[in-house]
Image (cartoon, rainbow, N blue to C red):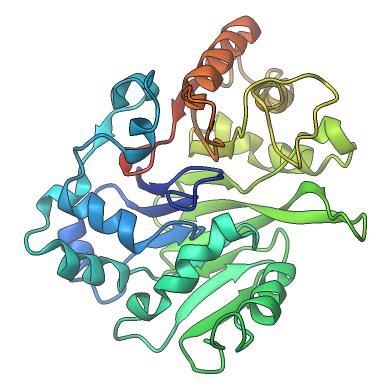
Length: 351
């Protein structure tokens, strides 16, 4: 089985729209069927973008993504992609606003990587439109994320207590323990990540990666939240993930790795706030390559890498172009042979 990914948002800020959110479904099931299935195999990863971006996508998914219109030097969409673009919402007929409500109401749950606003803001605002006919919407994440959402957002002050009102379920996932979602259509394993240091407590800020497996085909995607390279803090959290997924690269069941690259390469002493640069991204994948190369020649050749969470450049040049150029150069120099695609808000693809 292949996965179809629709990026409602892929930005890492500082703009307030188009932030990280991905719709995920089996590629062979069209949205026209998703709307009719009683238990659709359809979920989200993060919720930094939602109703507005989805409405625009349903209304006209072939238009140039808005983020690219911010820059004079942006390229055509296809120039950012190393995989074929798809248009899954073409099959839907009817007013965009009605279709929007129907699609959102079919989201069977959301995997939240961490509770920063650029990953949860839209899902907080959109909740009334996402519940549909079901009792409540399940959110999944770490205990830290669930506690943060309950205590600091759904607390009756910042936002109504949607858990108390029965609109929302907050589900804490145990680390490295499989959990079934979407009526057992998928199995999810969470892994811990480091996303910088909390300023006042000096504790490591917790983010998550998710390994999602289709229960029927055993096809997989690996999606990272915001995180930093193991070389920054020396915690080796990422190494544990690479060791776990290595067999799935060898047998071909790992279809795609989605991970952040927030900014272009910078001076060594620059504060990254728990994010990756192109050098860090390739460095991490070289570690995976080292684990695998005793088992297979060129083990990462043609592995799909989708890059998200790029921070917008208010100085005027498209940051994706520079990051893409650096990644391609580092990919060539390392001989990894990765297929690198830059995620774009409003763009879908099959992996």
